[in-house]
Image (cartoon, rainbow, N blue to C red; front, top):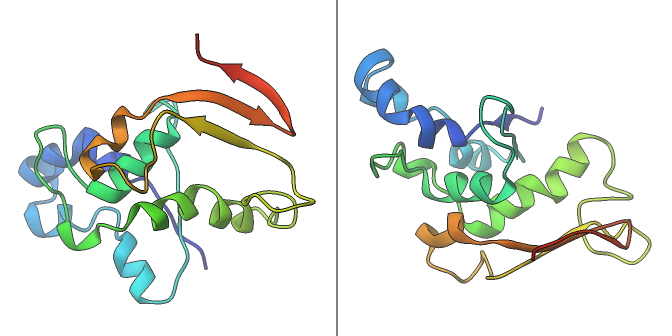
Length: 148
């Protein structure tokens, strides 16, 4: 079993769930990423477009920080490292779709699908991940997007 979480939920609706629908204890377990890891499970992340805009950077940010719009941490014990969040949207996502032989990591023989960023999500302050910009997108070895 491989769960797919919507950690962006904590950012957009975490305050509402904490205060109005679920209460603090249940709201703080909305996207239990760290709990899945402790049970030896890989997981993926999704954005539920058009519910939330499709932004892999925002997915990584919310998976790492688990913060709401107000800045409250919605489930501090569910935070994961930027490295794990990146695996959730790359390598583990490819594995979930049975595409790990051709996608998900930069290895000779796989499709060259990747982005060039203006900062490193593994080394920036985790709160700054959402500010990282995509400079270029490469798909199957060809540039398909380039920032102006």
